[in-house]
Length: 440
Image 1: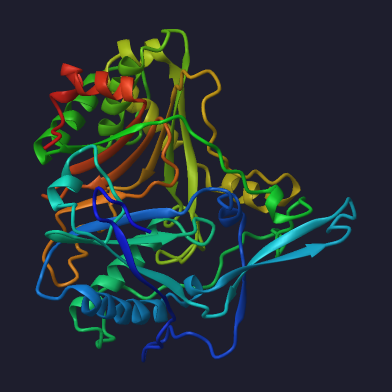
Image 2 (image 1 turned 90 degrees about the vertical axis):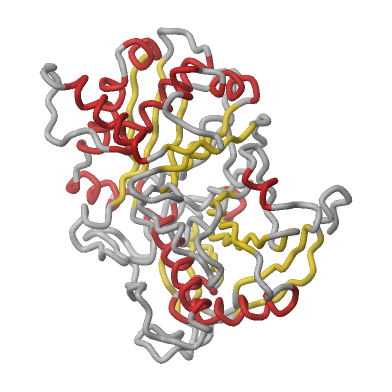
């Protein structure tokens, strides 16, 4: 595969298998079967998590670089060995209730390995990638290196993804030999609520009936930076606007909620949506620490979905505080008991998440991904702090907003926004929105 413009070329592909480490979390001698939870199975049709960091170039390049990364990755996989396995689909006649054919999807911890792809793009520079609207998924550039991971979302969520990334980078910069890491060990066993059947059966005849791949209308992407001061100002403004209002506030509006409210308002203006149109913001609510029994370092999906909805007029006209309060309440309304009950009964009417293109060409959704709490810029691989973070092509649709910590730390944030070309052009020309962000 080669691109004549950038010189992009795949140099090699190899299977990297887990290399056991002298730690409690070593790969088993015999393959194990790990059953997937309802939290996992709902993501089975969602594209892979695809993220990467842009690093400075050093003297180690070419095949030597690929070999070093493969060695450290093998040692990281030794601690995350289920991620080197494969899905196993088992068809069951009659099903658990005798209502018809069904199937189960499990993870076989078979150590088959993960594919490592080494590519070069000598016609692409670091500045090309940092440019807000250019995100090529490459590895070795003219003056830098882009190191990326791709992980099936049905296996784990963003917390586990960045835990693996942090482990890989720490092992790599330590020379791929040390076993004592600052990254904590994983809890590998899957968590199921009481009364949830194991394995969970799905009412489909074959796995192809579950997976849907939708062609989305073209979008443009832009990466916005919010400084520490900008984030602080948005948070202060949002909370000040809600002071003295009749809205009950158990918890103050957070920095993330204020930033997302600012973006939601800007998106509604840029999309020129009708005032009476319902607009919805979907944001992840982490369940580690919210659901008793789910370990802090649990390897799997542990995310609920917070939903904030109202009319466009409310978002645009009521101010930053009111919009941020909607997001605040979407998180505050999380109910552990209801979450447990929903997971335990999920098999009775499985809800698979599908990203769908807007049928009327007038999207009103904002879908939030990732978190500013992930340690993105700690992945230096011995090459210093990453210059930038970018995401891959999966799940790119109008309204997807990916949130990262800012490179400068201190509560700063980076936000990757996907919108239609026309709407994104209007967003970047929106003076109120751009006062709080920087595209540089």
